[in-house]
Length: 130
Image (cartoon, rainbow, N blue to C red; front, side, top):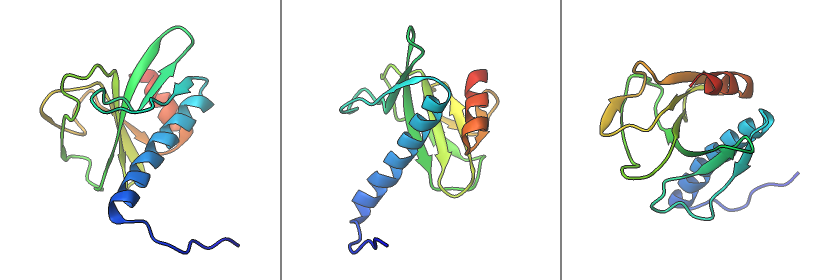
């Protein structure tokens, strides 16, 4: 059995963890029939992935939160970027939220933000409702 012999630096581990939520969302979108594209770099555009039904494209920002609380305040980190949806994943709970981009600071579980369980079926059912 392979055993990992080295430990990643804290900033590298944080990057890997964030990337894991992006690839998780991408796999769930693909399982639902979406085409998924990863930008080579998202500096400035704030686009972690792009999904398409073959005709329409949607730009998505993925965020992970180090909390179990759903009533926390979240800050917009995409001012001026042209994105369509933001996905928030809890790193400690088995839930997340799908939102449209917003400005400033808002409550994560406010009306209009759709909660999902961290599984493919529930995520795709909730994404279809946004």
